[in-house]
Amino acid sequence: MSDPEGMVGRQSKNARLTTEERFVLSEATLSHPLAVVLNGWAPPSAEWGGKARHVARLGAAATALARLGLIDVHEEHAGVDEPTLLSRDEAVDAVGTARNWWREDADAGGDVDSTFYSVAITDQGRAELASAGGGILLPWLRMRSAYE
Image (cartoon, rainbow, N blue to C red; front, top):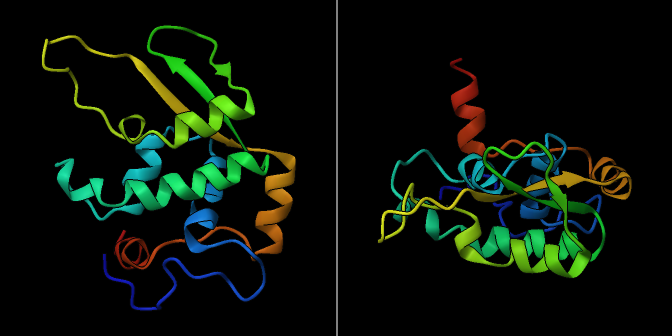
């Protein structure tokens, strides 16, 4: 991924959050599923291979945020109205598991897994994000949004 400002993986000057952590927190303000977070971070690509390389960094960021109580993680199932709030340990496990960030529509046997995970910012996370200067928009998104 292009990083003309040299910010990916670095901490901001105003806070202890990495760029990845700030991005995940920004996405958590909208209670986005992990796949949406990944799609927001990675440049557009319909192929998993184009996005898979970003999962380790985002997973590490989300894991750190979950451990600190800055995000909540919900397990959701298609067709079920109420998501389940995971415990902190379950949340850490869910965001740290690569397959939870992206799934093909069906597995090799043709079965569709309708389970997905969403991140939601906590009050403590909202305060931390504000102290870090707020959410971020990645360089490739800034360029795209200028034309929309």
